[in-house]
Image 1: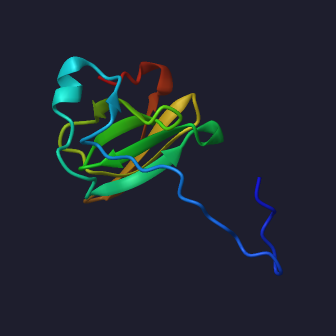
Image 2: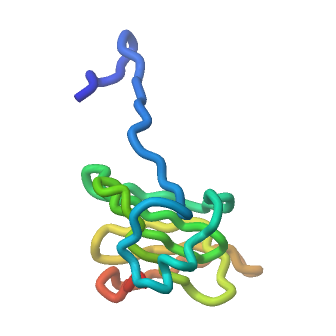
Amino acid sequence: MPAEAGPKRPWHLEQSFKVQPHSGLCYAGKETCANRLDRSYTNVQALQLGHGGSSLLVLHSAGVLDAWDLEKGAFKGQLQLGQGKAYQAMCHDGGWLRLSRQSPSGPILEELPWASVRFA
């Protein structure tokens, strides 16, 4: 475990993983694995690391949520969120998935029970 950063101890970051939608293990359904992006992510809106850094959610392409198991380096699945809704941010706490988007009348915050989120 690296020492804490402070005035005399700068932060030190080591890259220990890389997610590539088009390669690696895929634990999602057969169709989802076959239809994964054929290139790197280009339109990422939000990232969230799970507890202990073992999982990753990627919100991209105006409403697509990808799930990764970072310990295994495996793509776990994908969820298409609300049709035509360009979400710009998200987070979850194990109870709720919260999403935000801009509308003509201002920002909108939506939430879904995390238990209802099913990745294909």
